[in-house]
Length: 101
Image (cartoon, rainbow, N blue to C red):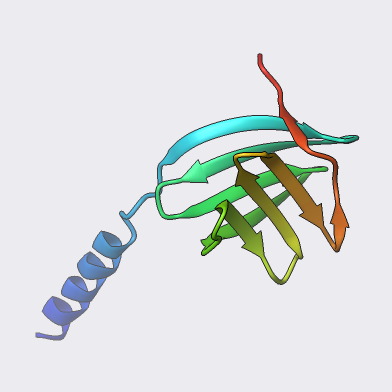
């Protein structure tokens, strides 16, 4: 019986690990002197690749567009009709321009 319960627990743990997150959209931006790559995931999060570091941002309520932020690392990316803006540690970068490749 113990082997059965242990085997079932392993099976359930393995099944729980099969959830995967898909990349919905991937873009590169130049925000002033800062170049970033963003990956929007299908779980309402975003990964921002900047200076060799990956920042995981979560989508938050924002009245005038879309905003992703990480309060711990103090990184945010905000998209409005007026453009896309990056902020890092209280520094607001100039409006981001999408890099087309």
